[in-house]
Length: 314
Ligand SMILES: Nc1nc2c(ncn2[C@@H]2O[C@H](COP(=O)(O)OP(=O)(O)OP(=O)(O)O)[C@@H](O)[C@H]2O)c(=O)[nH]1
Ligand SMILES: [Mg+2]
Image 1 (cartoon, protein in one colour):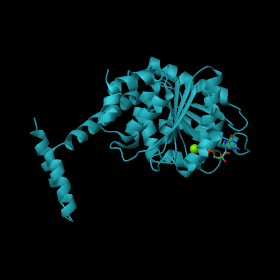
Image 2 (cartoon, rainbow, N blue to C red):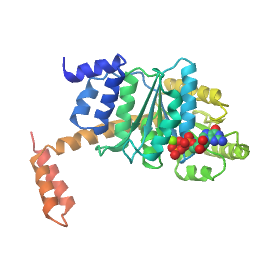
Image 3 (cartoon, helix red, strand yellow):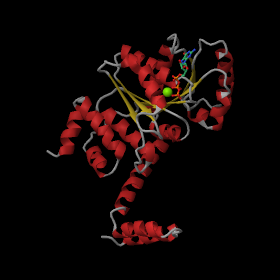
Image 4 (cartoon, rainbow, N blue to C red):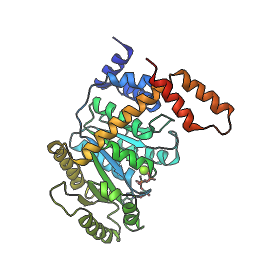
C-alpha cells in the first residue's frame, strides 16, 4: 500500500493526527498534496457552511455557538478559520482560539486555521482541499470562518455550499456588505448581537434590502435570523435555517451557484495542474534565469516561450 493510501485510510478512520498532517500538506500544495487527495474518497457533499461578514461582526463567537448547537443535535463539526494573509500566529486567530476554547476537549469537534503559505492557487484552493479532507474524515458539518475581509470572502463563496452572512447592528455594515456583493451571495443572514438595542433597526433594514434583492420566490428564499451568541438566543432557528438550506441543495443540485462552484473547482484543478506541469519544463528554468538577470524582462514574451516549449513537450 502506498504511503498516501495509508495516510488517506487513517483520515477516513478518524485519526485526528493524520488529518492535521494532511491539512498541512494541502496547505503547502504541490504534487504531494495531489497524490494524497487522489487517495481520498469523496465524502458526502453539501455540508460546507461559509461564514462571512465584516471584521468584528461576531463571526467567531457565533461559529462557536453554532458548533455547540450542532453538537447538541448529535452532529460532528469541523471548523476552519480561513486566513489569507498571516501564518497561524496572527493576532485575530489567537483571539479566536481563546474564544473557541469552549469547544476544546470535545472529540466531535476539529478546529484548524488555514493560511495560504504561498501555495499556488491561493487560499480558495487550500480551503477547498481542507473541506474535502474534513468531509472524508466524516465531519457532519464543516464551518469555514473568514478572518479579515476580501480575498477570503471570495474563497468562501467559491467553496461553501451554504453562505451565512453575519451582520452586526449599527456600524453601517449593511452598506459595506452590499458593496462587497455579500448580500447577493448570502443564503442565510444572521443579525448578530441581537441583545443590543440597535439590533431591531438593523434587522428591519436588512429585511427590506433582502426583499429588494431577491424578489423571486421560485429559488431558495434567503432566511434572516436575529441571534445573540452571547446570550445564546436565536441559535436554534439559525441552525434550522442552515440545515434547511442543505436539504434544499440536495433537491436542487443544478442552481447557478452550484454550477459556479463546480466550475470554480474545475478551474482550480486545471490552473494548479497546468502551472505545476509548466514549472517542470527546461524553459521555465530558463525563464527564471532571465528574471534574475534582466531588470525589465518582457514577461509576455517569456510566457509565450514557456508555453511554446511546454506544448511541444511529449
Ligand atoms: N453584545 C454582544 N456582543 C457580541 C456578541 N457576539 C460577539 N460579540 C462581541 O463582538 C466582538 C467581536 O466578536 P468576534 O466573534 O470576535 O467577531 P469576528 O467577526 O469573529 O471578528 P474578526 O474575526 O476579528 O473579524 C467581541 O468583542 C465579542 O464579544 C453578541 O451576541 N452580543
Ligand atoms: Mg473571528
